[in-house]
Length: 299
Image 1 (tube, one colour):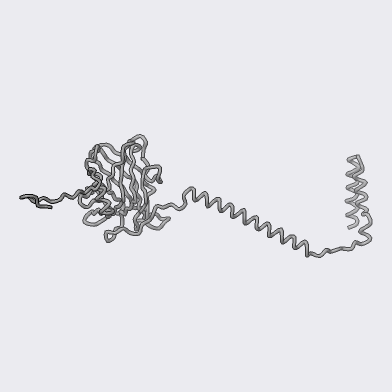
Image 2 (cartoon, helix red, strand yellow):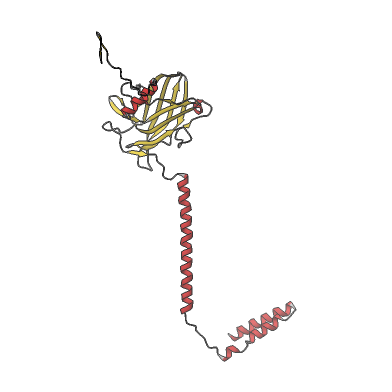
């Protein structure tokens, strides 16, 4: 009963039915799963939305340390990340995500540098994610080249994984092995971005990174093509041989009667035969000249 003696008591609801103590990280993950995925991050410049960015997960890792999940820090509308360093122009765009101090990192900032270029061969503008920068501890920086991330400027770009990990298609490549870039790993999961021609604060149709012609698929296609060519050649030869057999069966045998003169030995052939039997070279040549002269006289 809530009333005991002169005091009112209320039952305490245990949020954890298993009786174990939940830490803050577990609670945040539980709340995030209940709230569902966050909406895209909208960045404005000069009062106009110029960048849309969305990812189901953003995580970074230094060497063999555990991954630091930055997803909630970026997309949680209750505590939005600082994007004041972002810049948008017609040719260039920079998405700046300033996190401040995160665990052992001081002044953590992630920047995405993008460009908008017109290509005559394609006849249109394409935007490219040129590089991704991780600034930390105020003076340290890790840079990744991302030139394989591109799409038409009128579209957004989507990829299931934009990462520096080798287990995915390595779209983020450390710019240099002499700096600290090789010690860092960064992964965007279900990544989508648009930095140019943003209309109505919504993503345009996405240009997906899914590569249908992977090396394994390409090798399979080439092998199949070779087998088809061999099979087509074999069928052609079988049909050709059957056609020859039918022609040999149905063709009529034609006999040409020989004249009596044709059965008599030719005078020239007799002389040539005697020339071949002559051992001396001079006599052999004389015979040949004689036969040639006789033929001219006959003509």
